[in-house]
Image (tube, rainbow, N blue to C red; front, side, top):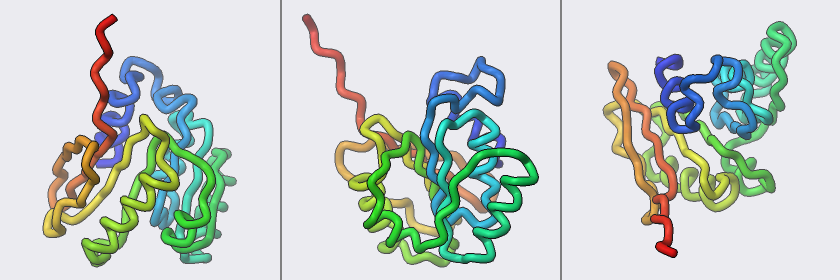
Length: 169
Protein backbone atom coordinates (compact mmCIF):
# COMPACT_ATOMS: atom_id res chain seq x y z
CA UNK A 1 0.00 0.00 0.00
CA UNK A 2 2.75 2.49 0.92
CA UNK A 3 4.34 2.15 -2.53
CA UNK A 4 0.99 2.84 -4.21
CA UNK A 5 0.36 5.90 -2.04
CA UNK A 6 3.82 7.31 -2.70
CA UNK A 7 3.27 6.73 -6.43
CA UNK A 8 0.04 8.74 -6.09
CA UNK A 9 2.00 11.49 -4.30
CA UNK A 10 4.52 11.55 -7.16
CA UNK A 11 1.66 11.87 -9.67
CA UNK A 12 0.14 14.72 -7.61
CA UNK A 13 3.57 16.38 -7.48
CA UNK A 14 4.10 15.93 -11.24
CA UNK A 15 7.24 13.85 -10.68
CA UNK A 16 6.10 10.35 -11.65
CA UNK A 17 8.77 10.18 -14.35
CA UNK A 18 11.57 11.13 -11.95
CA UNK A 19 13.80 8.64 -10.16
CA UNK A 20 12.15 7.56 -6.87
CA UNK A 21 14.73 9.46 -4.82
CA UNK A 22 13.66 12.70 -6.55
CA UNK A 23 9.88 12.31 -6.53
CA UNK A 24 9.34 14.54 -3.48
CA UNK A 25 12.32 16.83 -4.06
CA UNK A 26 11.74 20.25 -2.56
CA UNK A 27 8.62 19.18 -0.67
CA UNK A 28 8.13 19.66 3.07
CA UNK A 29 6.50 16.52 4.52
CA UNK A 30 4.86 16.01 7.92
CA UNK A 31 3.96 12.56 9.27
CA UNK A 32 1.41 12.78 12.11
CA UNK A 33 0.87 9.76 14.39
CA UNK A 34 4.18 8.58 12.94
CA UNK A 35 4.64 5.37 14.94
CA UNK A 36 7.83 3.70 13.70
CA UNK A 37 8.47 6.56 11.27
CA UNK A 38 8.29 4.32 8.21
CA UNK A 39 6.26 6.87 6.23
CA UNK A 40 8.54 9.75 7.23
CA UNK A 41 11.61 7.72 6.26
CA UNK A 42 10.00 6.83 2.93
CA UNK A 43 9.36 10.54 2.27
CA UNK A 44 12.99 11.33 3.10
CA UNK A 45 14.19 8.54 0.79
CA UNK A 46 12.13 10.12 -1.99
CA UNK A 47 13.88 13.45 -1.63
CA UNK A 48 11.58 15.51 0.59
CA UNK A 49 13.58 18.55 1.68
CA UNK A 50 12.10 18.66 5.17
CA UNK A 51 10.55 15.71 6.97
CA UNK A 52 8.98 15.97 10.41
CA UNK A 53 7.56 12.96 12.25
CA UNK A 54 5.24 13.56 15.22
CA UNK A 55 4.20 10.95 17.77
CA UNK A 56 3.39 11.21 21.47
CA UNK A 57 5.08 7.90 22.32
CA UNK A 58 8.67 8.63 23.35
CA UNK A 59 9.81 5.06 22.73
CA UNK A 60 8.40 5.25 19.18
CA UNK A 61 10.29 8.52 18.71
CA UNK A 62 13.47 6.81 19.88
CA UNK A 63 12.89 4.02 17.33
CA UNK A 64 12.33 6.64 14.59
CA UNK A 65 15.57 8.39 15.48
CA UNK A 66 17.47 5.09 15.43
CA UNK A 67 15.87 4.06 12.13
CA UNK A 68 16.87 7.39 10.60
CA UNK A 69 20.42 6.97 11.86
CA UNK A 70 20.61 3.40 10.51
CA UNK A 71 19.27 4.40 7.09
CA UNK A 72 21.21 7.69 7.05
CA UNK A 73 18.04 9.58 6.19
CA UNK A 74 17.34 13.00 7.65
CA UNK A 75 14.13 13.46 9.56
CA UNK A 76 13.14 15.59 12.51
CA UNK A 77 11.25 13.86 15.30
CA UNK A 78 8.84 15.59 17.70
CA UNK A 79 7.69 13.70 20.80
CA UNK A 80 4.35 15.34 21.46
CA UNK A 81 0.67 14.87 20.83
CA UNK A 82 -0.59 15.79 17.39
CA UNK A 83 -2.99 18.36 18.84
CA UNK A 84 -0.19 20.06 20.81
CA UNK A 85 2.04 20.06 17.74
CA UNK A 86 -0.68 21.59 15.58
CA UNK A 87 -1.51 24.31 18.10
CA UNK A 88 2.18 25.28 18.49
CA UNK A 89 3.37 24.76 14.90
CA UNK A 90 4.67 27.68 12.83
CA UNK A 91 5.92 25.71 9.81
CA UNK A 92 3.97 24.86 6.65
CA UNK A 93 4.14 21.55 4.84
CA UNK A 94 3.39 20.55 1.26
CA UNK A 95 2.18 17.12 2.36
CA UNK A 96 0.65 16.30 5.75
CA UNK A 97 0.10 12.58 6.32
CA UNK A 98 -2.22 11.26 9.04
CA UNK A 99 -2.09 7.64 10.14
CA UNK A 100 -4.07 7.84 13.40
CA UNK A 101 -5.15 4.87 15.46
CA UNK A 102 -8.21 3.39 13.77
CA UNK A 103 -10.19 3.88 16.97
CA UNK A 104 -9.63 7.65 16.95
CA UNK A 105 -13.08 9.23 17.03
CA UNK A 106 -14.26 10.69 13.73
CA UNK A 107 -15.01 14.11 15.25
CA UNK A 108 -11.51 14.26 16.75
CA UNK A 109 -10.05 13.38 13.34
CA UNK A 110 -12.10 16.14 11.70
CA UNK A 111 -10.84 18.65 14.28
CA UNK A 112 -7.24 17.64 13.63
CA UNK A 113 -7.75 18.02 9.88
CA UNK A 114 -9.19 21.53 10.42
CA UNK A 115 -6.25 22.46 12.67
CA UNK A 116 -3.81 21.10 10.08
CA UNK A 117 -5.34 23.18 7.32
CA UNK A 118 -5.27 26.27 9.49
CA UNK A 119 -1.82 25.82 11.06
CA UNK A 120 0.35 23.51 9.00
CA UNK A 121 -0.71 23.03 5.37
CA UNK A 122 0.86 25.06 2.57
CA UNK A 123 -1.73 26.82 0.40
CA UNK A 124 -1.21 24.35 -2.44
CA UNK A 125 -0.54 21.42 -0.10
CA UNK A 126 -2.08 17.99 0.18
CA UNK A 127 -3.63 16.26 3.20
CA UNK A 128 -3.40 12.45 3.23
CA UNK A 129 -5.48 10.51 5.76
CA UNK A 130 -5.24 6.76 6.28
CA UNK A 131 -8.34 5.24 7.92
CA UNK A 132 -10.19 1.96 8.31
CA UNK A 133 -12.89 1.48 5.70
CA UNK A 134 -15.26 1.16 8.68
CA UNK A 135 -14.54 4.76 9.71
CA UNK A 136 -16.62 7.61 8.39
CA UNK A 137 -15.12 9.58 5.51
CA UNK A 138 -13.15 12.47 7.02
CA UNK A 139 -14.71 15.90 6.74
CA UNK A 140 -12.73 18.32 4.61
CA UNK A 141 -13.79 21.96 4.68
CA UNK A 142 -15.60 23.78 1.93
CA UNK A 143 -13.19 24.76 -0.81
CA UNK A 144 -11.37 21.42 -0.72
CA UNK A 145 -11.59 18.66 -3.28
CA UNK A 146 -11.03 15.11 -2.09
CA UNK A 147 -10.62 11.64 -3.51
CA UNK A 148 -9.66 8.25 -2.12
CA UNK A 149 -8.11 4.88 -2.83
CA UNK A 150 -8.96 1.58 -1.14
CA UNK A 151 -6.45 -1.05 -0.11
CA UNK A 152 -8.29 -3.96 1.54
CA UNK A 153 -9.50 -2.75 4.95
CA UNK A 154 -7.73 0.60 4.55
CA UNK A 155 -8.88 3.72 2.72
CA UNK A 156 -6.47 6.54 1.95
CA UNK A 157 -8.14 9.94 1.54
CA UNK A 158 -6.47 12.84 -0.24
CA UNK A 159 -7.60 16.46 -0.11
CA UNK A 160 -6.36 19.76 -1.46
CA UNK A 161 -7.76 23.22 -1.96
CA UNK A 162 -9.81 23.57 -5.11
CA UNK A 163 -7.66 24.92 -7.86
CA UNK A 164 -8.87 28.29 -9.04
CA UNK A 165 -9.27 28.56 -12.79
CA UNK A 166 -6.83 30.83 -14.56
CA UNK A 167 -8.30 34.26 -15.18
CA UNK A 168 -8.74 35.17 -18.82
CA UNK A 169 -6.52 38.03 -19.87
